[in-house]
Figure 1 (cartoon, rainbow, N blue to C red):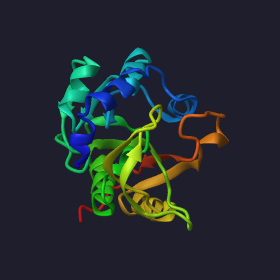
Figure 2 (tube, rainbow, N blue to C red):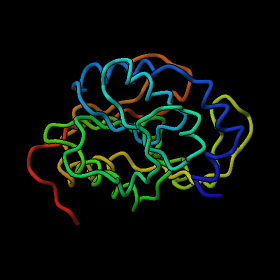
Figure 3 (cartoon, rainbow, N blue to C red):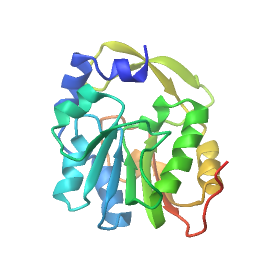
Figure 4 (cartoon, rainbow, N blue to C red):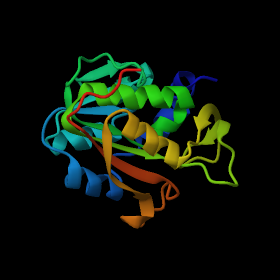
Length: 211
């Protein structure tokens, strides 16, 4: 099953639609690093982060592969699109957010393309904040299923745990300087998906490579 199909499942949509708040860790890093201005909300889904960003004055644009998810979000500035091929001109956003390990639904090649694309659409000194479930020595790198938080049901959906060092190398390759990297519970104790890493990076003013 593709990512789009998995996230068009009514049960999955209902699970995500029930969530209304930012993680405490997201709120901490957004307040610390984001600037007021247009914010790209990648993998926005049913709008958990989008509506919070809107209320805080960050002018979000929601992007997701799933039309069904975005329809549930009821957000006017929504775009159906692929995070690895963004339909925006260079320098369109001051900030970008890819929450809830959304980057892990992309293959390693597409993860690199996504980071390059985010670099392209951010202004110089723009901020990219995202979350990954990093691979550890005892884990598989590639899964064909995930268990959505709040449900005991397994939904078949590609999931790729990257090595953290490889993600940090891609950020440097595409013009970013890492501002923060650490486990989620380093910032605040939270039960929902505690075993993931939060990463904040600044898009340097120099133009990143396009290959």
